[in-house]
Length: 256
Image 1 (cartoon, rainbow, N blue to C red):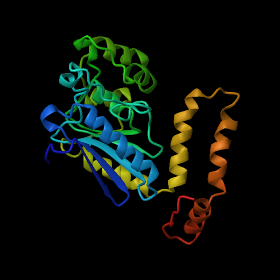
Image 2: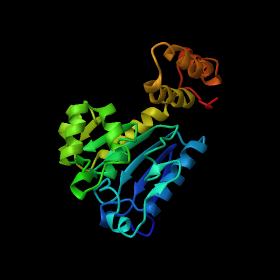
Image 3: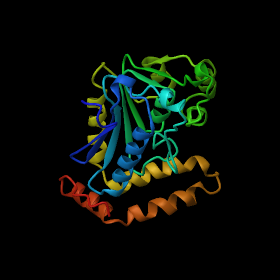
Image 4: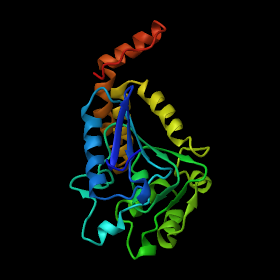
């Protein structure tokens, strides 16, 4: 891979792979990276031929966070409406899987936890290390981590800035799979294929309900859910799924 393009995007068999491509800088995020990631995610959600995406990094590392050299010159890798890295404040409607090798630190971890599923190499390292540089994990680490792992463990990560191993991250419930070094992307692709084989409308709405339900009260949650899922039950895909099951064949999804 070259470093001519800050982000590489590939679409194969309905799976988009977004690769942060600044290996010499451990894929640190500058404005060019953020802009390219945002564009890729716009394409993901607008293109019906793409079912799921994977976010990964080139050169054996996921992302070391914000490009501090660019930061001291006044550059901020933030996209209006999407936040840090073009992702932190706006999750795509379709599933996004992080494939992590090496380091996912500071803003890199915040991009990782903005994904829906996480596959990590057994020697990967994780941390919100901003406090070690006199900064604050303002791209979601302080808000999302306590919702994804026990709050006391999130507090420890935020205040110490120390690294956590893949095994500890797995034990905390932060990641989905720990795999041999060098195979995170392959495993993420396997998950992507499994997701892509399902009804795209059902997948999208399932993610939407799970993302939005955190803000629903007990009194309103069933009504809110019905509002979103009712159209799925009367969709062409629902009929096709039931018909394909009865006919013992693979369904032909239209996303409608």
